[in-house]
Length: 384
View 1: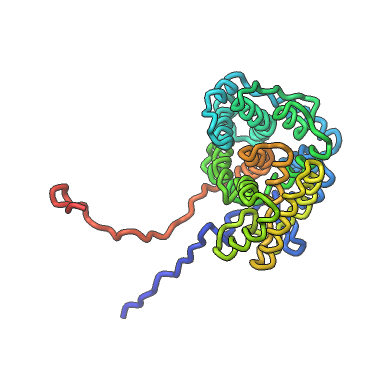
View 2: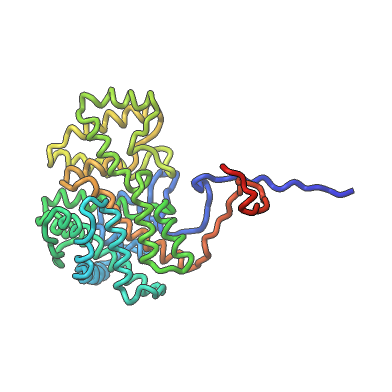
């Protein structure tokens, strides 16, 4: 008698929800405190006590720098801020209505073409390339913005912090220190968040032993989507479409009744609210006071109250960041490229970690298509 065994049931994890693909030392959300940490440090404490450059060093080295290490690190980053005349020429050829994430993706790919170390996947070379991208990406974004406005790019300065320098290159001046502080804190909050879609994309690409520029280019493409980095843009578009505090309650009532997507809420990792939100909201409120933006605060208060009470879903980081960037004067399509200024640190930290103990990413799929069948000669195939 022949025994028959049934094939084991295969469970599909759509979106890879609940699937662990690897280990990582870079960041973790501790459930007991609902806190995102970078190498064990709570992100809200990093934003409060450190500049973004210190956080970048932490993500690449696993420890915060001392004064001498920070001085050396900043000197290296500042020395790499200029971009080539060839890249400026290419930026001038971009369509003026192209999304800045598309132009940034292409420009970063060109950095790889220019870099003689591009194919060197050693940790030392990848560290140097990571610093180059951290230094040059703000210059690319600001140059692209000004060129599409018919203005000349403004060269970076080496005596400014990263946050100050970006305002200088974008607007031609550095604003009040409180505005710079808000911007710098947002970079820290955005710097890293585990195996999110863009980070996983980067790790997948480099797992084939492709180079770091290819991985970052792919990550930029992933981040552009409105379900990921593009959500901060979508939040501001939503607020502008509502238009006024007086219309907010009726808008959210209609959205919830008809199950419309309300941008800036929910997160795959957090269930009891994003730990970054209260702290970034404080900076958003500071911006509202500085830039006469109280109406955006009141509108968001109404939206958050309703969604939390009626759906049990909390705001994510994009909810306060969108209007905060808007009040700083940045145009909405620039919001996600700013995210890249920050997340380049997390992406490259993960790329280097992936290469330390690499295995090619190759998941399986369950086939649900047509069963195997023979190919019919052309004269016997029926008309559709």
